Image (tube, each protein chain N blue to C red):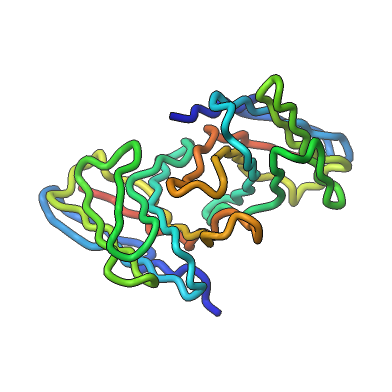
Length: 114
Length: 115
């Protein structure tokens, strides 16, 4: 089955700096890569996603890049703010198949220091 | 439109007791899932369902059972609770159509402690 590795496990940045979280996946058939943000005691919430026919996607201060050849995708957060502090999960799946399910990375605890 | 609703939010069980975690969604999603999240850890898939009457095991199904009699409901049953089942349980759902693509919608979670 699919295996998703996520790094780093913890990341501390100063407010205004950029943060980058990286994930690799094992199944070359995977074609859908969402990112979730989970604040303390809350449910995971989808913040951005990308499909395998796209190399990069941006939404305001958040961007995701995908390198299919290397089976690698990354989350980039620019101009970080204290409210960006949370655990971030990457995930991968084969979208559209009859067996659709996400495999999650172990998460990255991002701390933005004011 | 309530999304994915989980009950209860918190529960303390004694070892050997049983309980059912309820999950219902009102988005007409075909896919539904149960994940558990241990403290400081990621999400592990327990069971999932691709539609009413169809269920399948995830990576950590032992000690749990599920049923899917309707599109809306996907209850998770714990039989003979053990301390290792202390965790936060999330139910999630997803539409079948891969084009209109918003990933999973998660419920607010059930925090279960087995003592």
